[in-house]
Image (cartoon, rainbow, N blue to C red; front, side):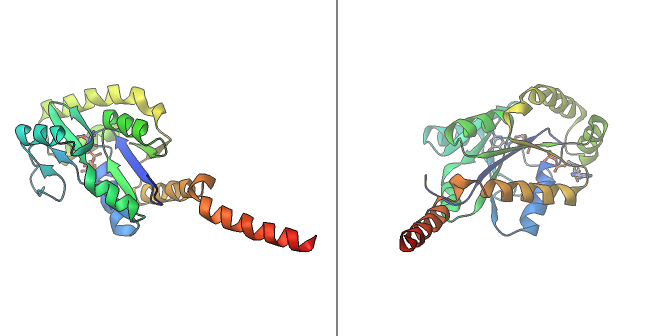
Length: 211
Ligand code: ADP
Ligand code: 5GP
């Protein structure tokens, strides 16, 4: 795929603050597009269909899988989550940096399909704070919180697969850091081939004229 936008994957333990971070990122900078996933989990109070997620039932989700509608999908604690294909392609082609906030199995599928994707893993400053945030959010039962923390210990084994970790202690610092990392990734020579080639061509002309 030829494009100038960067495909960014953001993963992290439940409660680390990924959603909060994404909202601030979109508020603060206008060169990011956040992909909205589909899921079979029930909406939390305040969540709206088409804003946080596209909420589908299991049958609808499985039909979308069959139709090839997802770039990737995975099961996370008994529910399906998937990234719709169309939006991501369109935004990348329009030159936007597209952010996929997805869990680790999906992240590995993206890494395989798009080796140039930038993979970031959001971490809490410490585990006590993670528990505080997850409980403090008040959106899950104690049983689901416990399951999510157990899943976090499994996910922690895969962190080295990511390009960078992002410690979400102070939110504003973390948003800035994310934007800096993306900026640095955008400066890689292979993402700037046209610019480099133009300079080379001009230098060649200059060098020949001087002979
Ligand atoms: P995730 O999307 O990773 O599951 P959320 O974005 O829902 O996590 O954040 C979990 C809870 O932690 C929320 O109540 C949120 O307000 C809070 N939170 C997020 N980032 C920070 C931060 N930097 N400092 C303090 N609280 C935070
Ligand atoms: P939550 O239920 O807290 O909204 O999300 C649970 C987990 O699913 C989080 O780790 C979140 O990043 C992940 N997730 C959200 N959307 C997708 C998706 O489209 N694909 C995959 N693989 N994971 C997703």
